[in-house]
Amino acid sequence: MSAPGDLRADGAPAGGGPARDGDPAPAPRRRTATVDPVKVLLHHHQDLCARAVDPLEIAAGLEARGVTDRTAARFRHRDVFSLAEELYARVPRPAEQPSVPGPPDRAPRPPGPAALAAALLPGVLGTAALHLPPPGPVLTAVWAAVGLAALWAALRTGPLRAPAGPAAGRAPLAAAALATVLLIGYGWYDSAATGAAVALSLGPATLAAGLFGTAAAGRLAASRSLDEFSAAARPLLLGTTGLYAAALAGLLVLTGGDLLTGTALGCLLHAARLLRVRGLPVAAALGAACAAEAAARALGLPGAGLAAAALAVLAHATLALSRASAHARP
Image 1 (cartoon, rainbow, N blue to C red):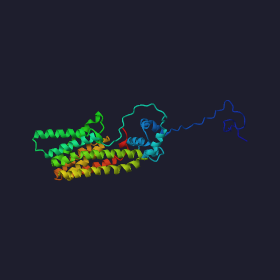
Image 2 (image 1 turned 60 degrees about the vertical axis):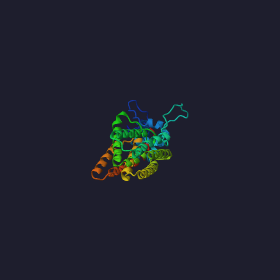
Image 3 (image 1 turned 90 degrees about the horizontal axis):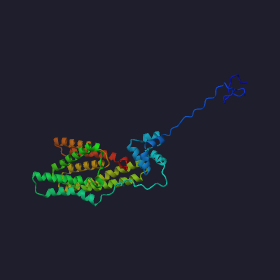
């Protein structure tokens, strides 16, 4: 028998009678609200996920925004690419969308004839300076200004063209340009032959940059994970840089320039330009290279500072340009 006052599970008296009006009603069960963390992440990165054409583009964008494999593990995914696949699958994509003109295609392409001609012009001017009678100071200044203008024009087209930065970033760009001029001055100061060879190497640099850009874009489209792309991008960068360095060394031999200074200077500027083309900062690295070479020359070791800086910038470029985010569409 049930003791008086006992209640059944439904709140009625245990004796079987109906619940009296004065008896308290049973408390309703509370339902714990569950929040879908991937849905929250999708909302936070809606713009990236909506415009992506494949999961790898989302993965590259997430990587650029600081999402790592450790972050992906908190969403129960093994890596960023797996998380990007789920985000890509969750974005609604109608079967038929109205035709809207999209942004211009900015996929890397091999350099065209105009870009190659512009890249060869500074070298032609530099080589001509080797065979002309020594001009006076005024003509020397004019010739240098023309050469720098040709260099500026060459860097405004083809695969060595860098994106225009915001107004707030003009100061670092100006600092990088000034450091580049100073570094080029080191080469010309050693010998006109060294400076001419480095100027001539702008042609091979354009071809190497175009080869790296198109090959990296192809690997980015074919890769199934960020690690797979990184493993493929590193040898691409080192291989194309090696081709450029070999061409530069041959030009230095032909012109009679200094092999150490010329090769180090060219490789330093080439690696820095590859970083700048993808919107990565280079002003501090170029400024440090100027300071390192000045210190090396004070110790009677010309070219040593450039060589050390070239190795450091190339190591940084190898890490930075093996990230998919460095090659993601703007």
